[in-house]
Amino acid sequence: MPKVHVHMSLLAPPIGLALVAIYATGQTQTIRPRQNPPQPYTAEFKITTVRTLANGTTLTRESTETRAVDRDGRAMTMTKEAPLSADQAAVTRVHVQDPVEGMNSNWDSQQSKATIVKAPPADQHQGCWATESGRYHWRFGAGAQPRQATPVKNAAAIPPARPKPEVVDLGNTTIEGVEAHGTRTTYTIPAGEIGNDAPLLRTYESWWGTTFGLLLREVNDDPESGKRTREVVSLSLGDPDPALFQPPEGYEVKTETAHPVACE
Image (tube, rainbow, N blue to C red; front, top):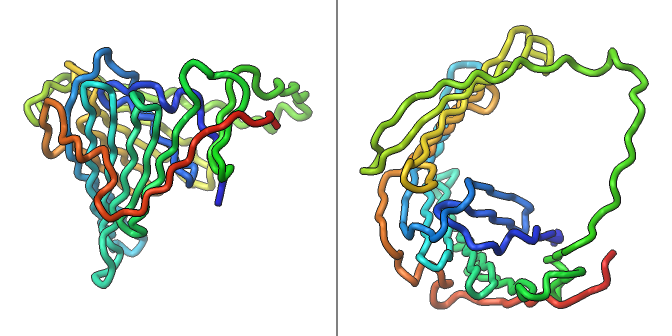
């Protein structure tokens, strides 16, 4: 299995939707800086991706995402992916970030297994650490050596700078009872840059809650990958159910604890 190099901010207390989740696959999610103290909430999102093929066929996929944050900064992200075919079951994946206990947990319904990773104590953030299996690594303090600059041999080979993105203020609206402010950013890829015979336009629209940093709606429209819409469909303010932060009963639970190791 691949190693996971954990940035020292991984276990920083999240606020609102400020999650930095790192999985064994290396996938990451980074969302706006946290508030202090956090606004506890439970939110459910619907994610829809639509792709149009060259022959006009449309492919649509839907999934759901649930996020919960309690007043102590514990954060949970649960995704439920729709099956690719009728004979397959939906897969639920959960990541929990617990700054109170200094732990991160992951589990999924496919394997019915949970992994709890105990990070280095907050008062010992120095040197290098790793868990027993070697899958999770931490490095604090002095890091990699700076890279040496490479001389430019052929300035003509440097591609021209892309046009600056165009940002449009969309004003305010109300989403699930929360005031949100929106912006739309348009990126232009000049003709010929990626083999395109005409300029390509990519747009990204985002709506953030004005009272606390929660991304309530986003629309990413890309001519290559299609249109992806993620929007909140239910929002409840207040402390979430504590059971959301614990692996389900009957799951096999494995705990990995960080220990000091020699830096590579």
